Length: 141
Image (cartoon, rainbow, N blue to C red; front, side, top):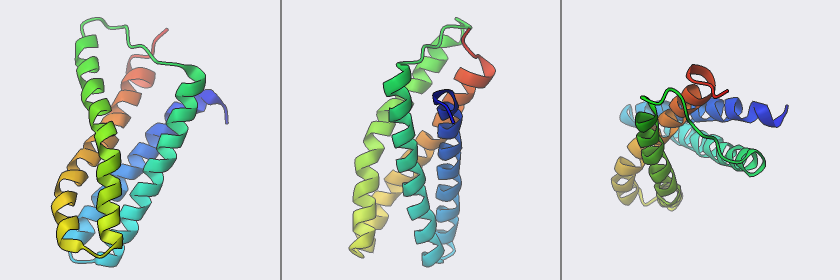
């Protein structure tokens, strides 16, 4: 595997995280706490692996610039800005939500998870969309 493969790996990890988040949501709604826990731990692991791969890629490859098409650039930058802001916010939210679950403080866990889950899902899905825009739909020459 080379450095050029990491954006696709990152998109796959974000996709896996979104799948685990969706399954975890389903399982907690159907009161299957064990399956919920397993899915959410899997989402944490895939998100952590994503973060490691993301940092390795950008440390070595530098930043990526979206130039063309010019008419779409403001839309892309808006998506990127919301994704980046929420990606920074989600790390402490996930850690607090996980900590509360580990400590079996489920009422507080549930209150924070109502914020954590949709933000985490948004970050995971928009990460895949950003990858598609940069590397598949509008690859920069």
